[in-house]
Length: 175
Picture 1 (spheres, rainbow, N blue to C red):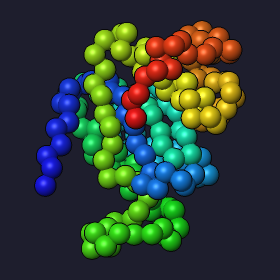
Picture 2: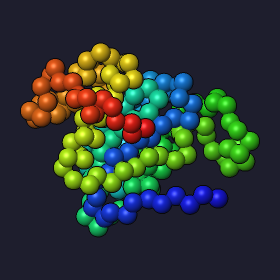
Picture 3: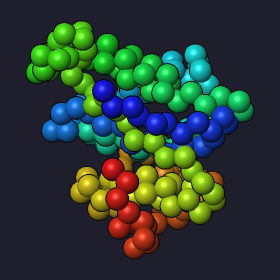
Picture 4: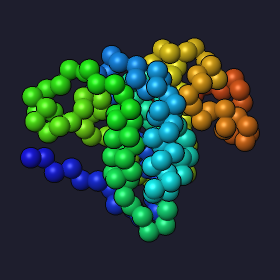
């Protein structure tokens, strides 16, 4: 059985990629209100700050900052994934292993996390998050994607409404 090593940084800031098991499905944007409610419930139980986020049809990217002294992002992700999956009507194809474990076939079991190292690392990941809908061909302009914190950043003056990522961000492969 593989042992996954997770970063332990109490009060840290982390970049995440979380994906559906079947990447052809569009459950996240089709059920955006359910996903938002799952996040809200998880944040009530175990607070964390969402610094930046983008929801695509089959995966999401976000940056969280955990409270001082707290390094447990895994329990938060488990909570979000379980709450969301519980509201999706059953019907997905399940492997024998998932059937035995009583699991749904909504989410990939694991997620990708990266501990943000410094301000430059933070900015590159925020840019990557906001450029992602363009990267995947969902829109041609970042501002056209509705499921993103991009507009919040525009409101704060971080980006202009016509912002597009630089070539370094466009080449990043974080998924």
